[in-house]
Length: 276
Ligand SMILES: NC(=O)c1ccc[n+]([C@@H]2O[C@H](COP(=O)([O-])OP(=O)(O)OC[C@H]3O[C@@H](n4cnc5c(N)ncnc54)[C@H](OP(=O)(O)O)[C@@H]3O)[C@@H](O)[C@H]2O)c1
Image 1: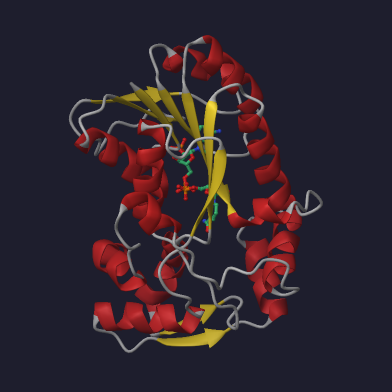
Image 2: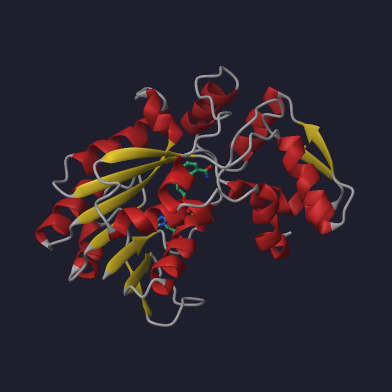
């Protein structure tokens, strides 16, 4: 039995599907215990990662745990996982954990989460992912309204990774010790600018989309207006304006772990065109 937290999220949905297709039994945890769209044989369970007591019952009989980072209950959940006989934990993390910069709000919560899994007594793997291709879903409202697409950090090239590939790596790290007790740095196959992604979206949707870069001031205003806490906005400015995080380098890890090259952004768009 495997417990997937964040099971309604971009990565969790893909991992639940991958485990089920591999014939594994899965509990899919979200706060509401949502069951719509789950593959046959997957049990939806309700639990809040900020309230470890609500997650405890879902750990019974579990061999491997996929954990979302940064929730208040993570150390207690990991201790209870060990008591319940869980053998392995795979943590969803980010490349910024590798900077070691605890003063950066985003890197800081990822580093805390990595410390927690490392100290858990379980075999652990941390998936240090670049930006997700699914971040492009944030452009969907604009694309539905017109052909001009305003993009933040227009000059920053990133090797975004498909949540499908993150899940494929997580699957293998949950099923064997081959990838245990280390971070894995995951990227997609190509370094793209935001305008490249808009062009690829336009081609797939049959639209003449045009990217317009937001200034740093406009980017900050939009991020704050979206409800992102200021320390996180500052964190992304540190990464992408001050250049403290380089996500422009393609790494071979996805192919090394899965035996297949990571999916391109065009493939991601092909699988998610309905969302636009
Ligand atoms: N986006 C990126 O570029 C990027 C890059 C590197 C790392 N990351 C990391 O990836 C994570 C996001 O992953 P994602 O995109 O797959 O997720 P997502 O689509 O943002 O969904 C979040 C998931 O977490 C669940 N959740 C939220 N609060 C919860 C709580 N208190 N207790 C239990 N479950 C809770 C949500 O379920 P319900 O709302 O249904 O409860 C949902 O399943 C972030 O932690 C981020 O640090 C993201």
